[in-house]
Length: 160
Ligand SMILES: CC(C)(COP(=O)(O)OP(=O)(O)OC[C@H]1O[C@@H](n2cnc3c(N)ncnc32)[C@H](O)[C@@H]1OP(=O)(O)O)[C@@H](O)C(=O)NCCC(=O)NCCS
Image (cartoon, rainbow, N blue to C red; front, side, top):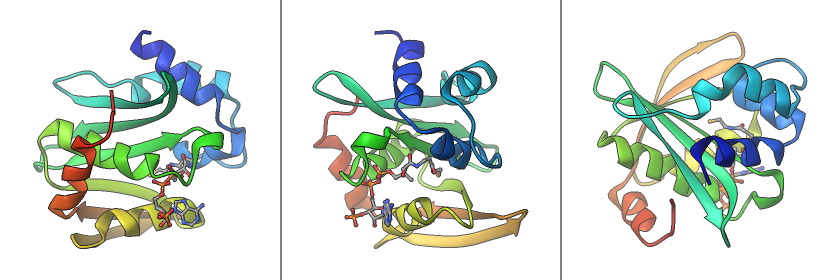
């Protein structure tokens, strides 16, 4: 399965409203529109960054994307299939994407009304360090340096 096919499978397994959360657009955005407009943001190649995929029984259920920034950090974001949430996939993909860049600190932009991703960021920062870098237009920007055990747990899981 190509990287593009994996990304397409994950995007098509998400509701239009959760895709709007991922891309900070109002309301809802259908999967095909996401793929037409945002594929380069979801499928990132080295050296700019990396996209990691979570597979369950060979089926793509989530992607984590990290783009290396000039300050030695990485901008990280995740998208998990609607039917695969609350199983720890999002947290693993966050950690895996960051780890794959070799950076220790992730920058994460989160919609202030997105309870799931706010909770995910809090969970990712548990035992590590979280700083609020900025606020604007309904978004919060965090820098998270996760605890080492988050990284170790990634090695135990099959993230391709
Ligand atoms: C946000 C998102 C990635 C979470 O993925 P997930 O695989 O469900 O997250 P996990 O199962 O790894 O959750 C890890 C922790 O985050 C918190 N969390 C995740 N979803 C939550 C929810 N809906 N409500 C409350 N807490 C939540 C919990 O603390 C959870 O740990 P727990 O289940 O042990 O309590 C997923 O909801 C998603 O893809 N949303 C749409 C796109 C988006 O908003 N992306 C975020 C951009 S950073």
